[in-house]
Image (cartoon, rainbow, N blue to C red; front, side):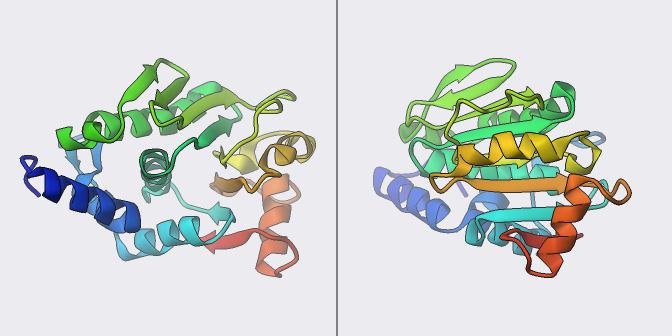
Length: 218
């Protein structure tokens, strides 16, 4: 898609992207690949299905292997959500801020490499090491999980990265879940880490339809 569009074409293109997250990702999201540098993010069929689940289901829990692009896909969903919906408050948490920062970096790479015409609709207002906010009121922040993580905020989306590796997440979920009470969403991602932890219990119960999480095993 050419970056040089008429005003009418820009409005149509913005509308298309807002209506179809897959269209937006495949045409406009770019990622950093270790060997090739900056390249387009072209989704695989299983990624298309998963990101549609992010849109369709309020709570998603994803048991994943490494190197399947699930964190990258989550970053693309965050970018889409922030651009095409006003006032979205998103928090990425992980056992360490460095872990949350990996996903956050992908968000920032995608934002900084969008076509220039996107800035006609939204502009970056704040861009620092732990937060990114737009002039439409949407923002994303990162933090290490703690007893106070996100407690004061009403969230549109909570992303818990590597959730199976977070000690004491049962108690922390009790503190975090009220931030979603006004219709907020949650995406819990993790590679496996044995049995008995919060992630294992919630995923197992989700498979039995005993909670409100939609489970996906990749």
